[in-house]
Image: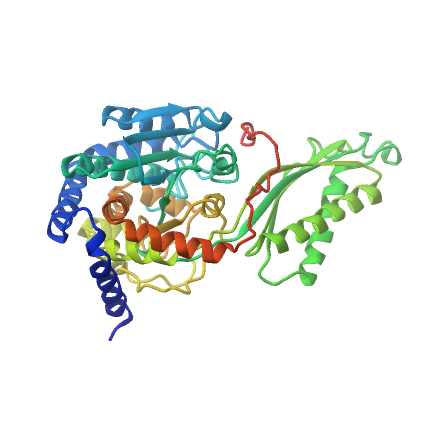
Length: 486
């Protein structure tokens, strides 16, 4: 038997086992799911317009005022109660429909990435007058989650299902850690399960993890002087940054091989003939285990101190973000996978295939067949993460959490690329977005209808968490870095 067929059999058996506890009979829940799919399809143009408007806004972390407002307005018009400005973040919100238990949360992101402006064309062509671009597809992310919530609310009301739907508008996922502050504020304390998704170049729903991440800006202060006339009177802050970077690069040989460290020099001085009295470098450090990561980051701090000592400069650092690794939940992932299989993958028109072929010609290495966007990857309970980090990780340590990825980009396209921005500005992105919306809504419907699914998710969550775990944010008590992209 094929792995995919075996997985579906297991899900089917589990559903039959839990059927006695379900609120609605199997035929009625099947009909409700068909209506959800139809409802999302009928609003294709509406959700396309919302997503592409946010794509054009291309607002970076904590500056997503228009994007957040558009999603909030859409939810209000659909009968949701919206609380905005939560957790001290002007663009964060929680939208609520229904009442009582269970409470199911759906995450919505909407921030863009700086320096990745791109038009919706298959060659590199920045958008005039715009620096940022949705190279991680968060314009699709937020829109799909809102679409899922609206379709779900309709079916709950129609079928008399009890419980509360909460949409969490979560800003600044790209390095700003908006969800961490929302977790710390206690906004997820009453939630029974959280569902999320992410744009990608394939369709999958596995209980995979992610890397814990600590990011910080290291600032060095020296003495300016004429670089030719009086260099001995200067103390270069840029020298300190370069010394730090060199020593960190040497350190890579002596840390676990699954560590990831990246940096950019965000300020290296203004003129070559002036010894820089200020310089700044922005670091990310990642590892699958946050306790190992903590030790690695302590070493990076010591390197920064040594660089300052050796260059006779002064060093300060600011923690910008810190996120947990992602805690998998296999029962929730299996349920989401079954619904993803029901929804199916993405099918392209001949024009979209031609667009995709042109995009693939700009990529390094071999790309999968474009037709693979129509397929669903087999379920893999031991799947590894993508190597990235996400502030969804913090949520997963306080409430059972599961996610999926759908083909919003042509197969082979990597995230954080101009090619991803280009695909996301077309119907290629919109089609994948609606696969996610339907899957999220169907999975949430199952959770509202059958309490056994939530019980299985809680048991898996507690087992993975262990008896002595207590959540503590890696950012400490700092306030949201609302200006980190300015």
